[in-house]
Image (tube, rainbow, N blue to C red):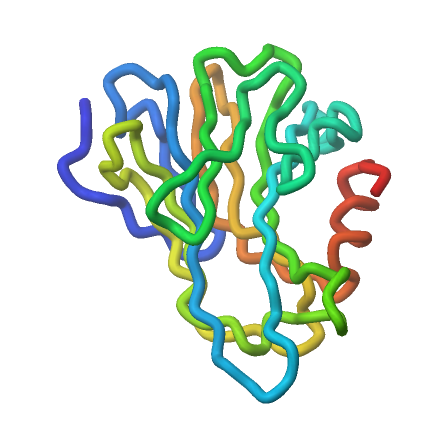
Length: 188
Protein backbone atom coordinates (compact mmCIF):
# COMPACT_ATOMS: atom_id res chain seq x y z
CA UNK A 1 0.00 0.00 0.00
CA UNK A 2 1.38 3.41 -0.96
CA UNK A 3 2.09 5.95 1.73
CA UNK A 4 0.48 9.40 1.64
CA UNK A 5 3.32 11.08 3.55
CA UNK A 6 7.06 10.91 3.84
CA UNK A 7 8.65 8.79 6.55
CA UNK A 8 11.17 10.76 8.61
CA UNK A 9 14.06 8.53 9.65
CA UNK A 10 16.42 8.97 12.57
CA UNK A 11 20.02 7.75 12.50
CA UNK A 12 20.00 3.94 12.29
CA UNK A 13 16.32 3.82 11.35
CA UNK A 14 15.01 2.04 8.28
CA UNK A 15 11.89 1.75 6.14
CA UNK A 16 10.65 -0.78 3.61
CA UNK A 17 10.38 0.76 0.15
CA UNK A 18 7.95 -2.01 -0.85
CA UNK A 19 5.53 -0.71 1.79
CA UNK A 20 5.74 2.81 0.33
CA UNK A 21 5.42 1.96 -3.37
CA UNK A 22 2.88 -0.41 -4.91
CA UNK A 23 5.49 -1.58 -7.40
CA UNK A 24 9.13 -1.00 -6.51
CA UNK A 25 10.87 0.29 -9.63
CA UNK A 26 12.83 3.47 -10.18
CA UNK A 27 13.47 5.83 -7.28
CA UNK A 28 15.39 9.09 -7.02
CA UNK A 29 17.91 9.62 -4.22
CA UNK A 30 18.29 13.30 -3.40
CA UNK A 31 21.05 14.95 -1.38
CA UNK A 32 21.02 18.45 0.03
CA UNK A 33 22.90 20.72 2.41
CA UNK A 34 23.65 24.33 3.25
CA UNK A 35 27.23 25.60 3.57
CA UNK A 36 28.18 28.37 5.98
CA UNK A 37 30.30 30.86 4.07
CA UNK A 38 33.76 31.66 5.38
CA UNK A 39 36.78 33.69 4.32
CA UNK A 40 38.67 30.77 2.77
CA UNK A 41 37.87 28.37 -0.04
CA UNK A 42 34.41 26.83 0.22
CA UNK A 43 34.05 23.13 0.80
CA UNK A 44 32.70 21.34 -2.26
CA UNK A 45 30.66 18.27 -1.38
CA UNK A 46 30.45 15.35 -3.80
CA UNK A 47 27.72 12.70 -3.51
CA UNK A 48 28.53 9.18 -4.67
CA UNK A 49 27.09 5.68 -4.61
CA UNK A 50 28.91 2.41 -4.00
CA UNK A 51 27.21 -0.69 -5.43
CA UNK A 52 28.07 -3.57 -3.06
CA UNK A 53 27.90 -7.35 -2.83
CA UNK A 54 26.71 -9.38 0.18
CA UNK A 55 30.12 -8.92 1.82
CA UNK A 56 29.74 -5.13 1.76
CA UNK A 57 32.43 -4.62 -0.89
CA UNK A 58 32.06 -2.81 -4.21
CA UNK A 59 31.47 -5.16 -7.12
CA UNK A 60 34.34 -3.42 -8.96
CA UNK A 61 36.06 -0.02 -9.18
CA UNK A 62 33.44 0.92 -11.80
CA UNK A 63 30.71 0.43 -9.19
CA UNK A 64 31.65 3.72 -7.51
CA UNK A 65 29.29 6.23 -9.15
CA UNK A 66 30.30 9.91 -8.86
CA UNK A 67 30.85 12.99 -11.06
CA UNK A 68 33.61 11.32 -13.13
CA UNK A 69 31.71 8.04 -13.51
CA UNK A 70 28.06 8.95 -13.98
CA UNK A 71 26.57 5.44 -14.07
CA UNK A 72 27.19 1.95 -12.80
CA UNK A 73 28.29 -0.54 -15.51
CA UNK A 74 24.83 -2.10 -15.79
CA UNK A 75 23.12 1.34 -15.75
CA UNK A 76 20.97 0.79 -12.66
CA UNK A 77 22.58 3.69 -10.71
CA UNK A 78 22.93 6.99 -12.61
CA UNK A 79 23.37 10.70 -11.93
CA UNK A 80 20.36 12.80 -12.97
CA UNK A 81 19.45 16.49 -12.90
CA UNK A 82 16.87 17.46 -10.34
CA UNK A 83 15.70 19.78 -7.60
CA UNK A 84 18.12 18.72 -4.85
CA UNK A 85 21.79 19.70 -4.68
CA UNK A 86 22.51 16.37 -6.41
CA UNK A 87 20.39 13.38 -7.42
CA UNK A 88 20.94 9.77 -8.38
CA UNK A 89 18.38 7.50 -9.96
CA UNK A 90 18.11 3.83 -8.98
CA UNK A 91 16.34 1.31 -11.17
CA UNK A 92 15.68 -1.16 -8.35
CA UNK A 93 13.71 -3.52 -10.59
CA UNK A 94 16.82 -4.05 -12.75
CA UNK A 95 19.54 -4.24 -10.08
CA UNK A 96 21.45 -7.51 -10.61
CA UNK A 97 20.92 -10.29 -8.06
CA UNK A 98 24.56 -10.10 -6.90
CA UNK A 99 23.99 -6.57 -5.55
CA UNK A 100 23.12 -6.55 -1.84
CA UNK A 101 23.16 -2.82 -1.14
CA UNK A 102 23.87 0.59 -2.58
CA UNK A 103 25.64 2.93 -0.15
CA UNK A 104 25.38 6.72 -0.50
CA UNK A 105 28.49 8.64 0.49
CA UNK A 106 29.08 12.38 0.43
CA UNK A 107 32.69 13.53 0.63
CA UNK A 108 34.54 16.85 0.66
CA UNK A 109 36.38 17.13 -2.65
CA UNK A 110 40.09 16.79 -1.79
CA UNK A 111 41.21 18.34 -5.10
CA UNK A 112 40.34 21.94 -4.20
CA UNK A 113 42.85 24.53 -2.98
CA UNK A 114 42.76 22.91 0.45
CA UNK A 115 40.98 19.82 1.75
CA UNK A 116 37.47 20.56 2.94
CA UNK A 117 35.47 19.08 5.77
CA UNK A 118 31.94 18.99 7.14
CA UNK A 119 32.39 21.73 9.78
CA UNK A 120 30.61 24.30 7.58
CA UNK A 121 27.82 21.91 6.51
CA UNK A 122 24.34 22.49 7.91
CA UNK A 123 20.87 21.16 7.11
CA UNK A 124 22.22 18.09 5.29
CA UNK A 125 19.71 15.50 4.18
CA UNK A 126 19.25 12.32 2.19
CA UNK A 127 15.86 11.44 0.70
CA UNK A 128 14.18 8.87 -1.51
CA UNK A 129 11.42 9.93 -3.91
CA UNK A 130 9.43 8.15 -6.58
CA UNK A 131 9.76 9.16 -10.24
CA UNK A 132 6.98 11.74 -9.88
CA UNK A 133 9.04 13.54 -7.20
CA UNK A 134 6.86 12.45 -4.29
CA UNK A 135 9.14 12.07 -1.28
CA UNK A 136 8.88 8.65 0.36
CA UNK A 137 11.65 8.70 2.97
CA UNK A 138 13.83 11.47 4.40
CA UNK A 139 16.77 11.55 6.79
CA UNK A 140 17.78 14.97 8.11
CA UNK A 141 21.30 14.75 9.47
CA UNK A 142 21.17 16.58 12.79
CA UNK A 143 23.73 19.19 13.74
CA UNK A 144 27.05 19.88 12.12
CA UNK A 145 30.03 17.59 12.06
CA UNK A 146 33.47 18.60 13.16
CA UNK A 147 36.47 19.52 11.09
CA UNK A 148 37.69 15.92 11.38
CA UNK A 149 34.82 14.61 9.21
CA UNK A 150 35.76 14.70 5.52
CA UNK A 151 33.31 12.08 4.22
CA UNK A 152 30.02 10.67 5.46
CA UNK A 153 27.77 7.75 4.65
CA UNK A 154 24.36 9.41 4.50
CA UNK A 155 22.36 6.21 3.95
CA UNK A 156 21.89 3.01 2.01
CA UNK A 157 19.30 1.05 0.07
CA UNK A 158 19.60 -2.67 0.71
CA UNK A 159 17.90 -6.00 0.09
CA UNK A 160 16.16 -7.69 3.00
CA UNK A 161 14.22 -10.94 2.48
CA UNK A 162 13.68 -10.20 -1.20
CA UNK A 163 12.49 -6.60 -0.66
CA UNK A 164 14.28 -3.25 -0.82
CA UNK A 165 14.71 -1.17 2.33
CA UNK A 166 16.38 2.16 3.09
CA UNK A 167 18.52 2.91 6.16
CA UNK A 168 19.67 6.25 7.59
CA UNK A 169 23.35 5.89 8.49
CA UNK A 170 25.11 9.22 9.21
CA UNK A 171 28.58 7.68 9.74
CA UNK A 172 31.43 10.19 9.41
CA UNK A 173 34.98 9.47 8.22
CA UNK A 174 38.08 11.44 9.18
CA UNK A 175 39.95 9.66 6.38
CA UNK A 176 37.82 11.09 3.55
CA UNK A 177 37.21 9.35 0.27
CA UNK A 178 40.34 7.22 0.73
CA UNK A 179 38.91 5.74 3.94
CA UNK A 180 35.57 5.05 2.28
CA UNK A 181 37.31 3.47 -0.74
CA UNK A 182 39.38 1.28 1.57
CA UNK A 183 36.31 0.09 3.51
CA UNK A 184 34.46 -0.80 0.30
CA UNK A 185 37.43 -2.18 -1.65
CA UNK A 186 37.54 0.49 -4.36
CA UNK A 187 40.79 1.75 -5.94
CA UNK A 188 40.82 5.52 -6.42
